[in-house]
Length: 304
Ligand code: NAD
Image (tube, rainbow, N blue to C red):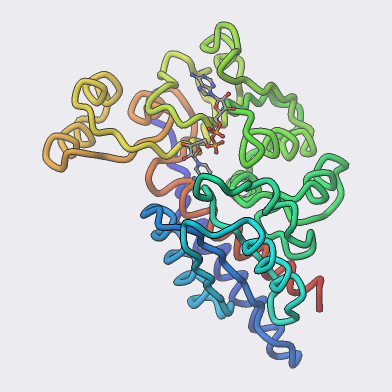
């Protein structure tokens, strides 16, 4: 039976470190870090994320500023807000919540954020620093996954790591961070041939795809460490019956509640084959906000 890598517990450790960092700044007479969150439109999931981010800021003593703009905001107005926040000395970090409503160019918005305040780590300057192996603000989800692996003593040197997914937010930066720690890294994606065989080579498998239960237990190398980044909502009973065969409780919840969250990996099957697995929910999800606030503190400490 695999060990469960508890993301919530590790997120709490990371948040406590941020809280202490904020305290240390205040003890030196410096102000609390300021994080500006820009939310455009009325995507319900984005509203929940922004609320969670503000609540987490309050817990660790980071000042958060929410800027809500209507869905029909013009790009020039979004640009102007970002410019104002870039120039505001009380703002150390700027986050533009994605996805933006149709008609707005998210790349243009992300590129406009000052790299020193780019707490999501999506600016090309920060991506370039990561590529060069230099310190910078790095994407929150993969950095927090690295922190989780380090906490659990997973030795990455020389191991075969497979990253499923090649997004700029998770897959690509995760692969670079693993490479930096001397893993031998394969990035697999939607066009990869014989995905199960590629996965079976992995001592460490990181799944960031967004397909519920894609990775079956039989795709895993015995003893592998599995980090499941995917967060998927399953509503279909027939899909649930397929992917939750080894998780009767989840199937029961699906039947009674009509929907459940799950990862890209079939957790119940993975528990029988792997040595360690992150659950969904309670794995990588809570780590991402902790990574964001870690970045906000880092940006504040670097800026002033
Ligand atoms: P994305 O849609 O940008 O990228 C998905 C990647 O998966 C693509 O590179 C694609 O090539 C690959 N892919 C798609 N179908 C595939 C298949 N059948 N086989 C192999 N590869 C396939 O997604 P993303 O933003 O990287 O997010 C991935 C998942 O992680 C989503 O479920 C998302 O909700 C979740 N996520 C979670 C957190 C968190 O905090 N835990 C943060 C970011 C993303």
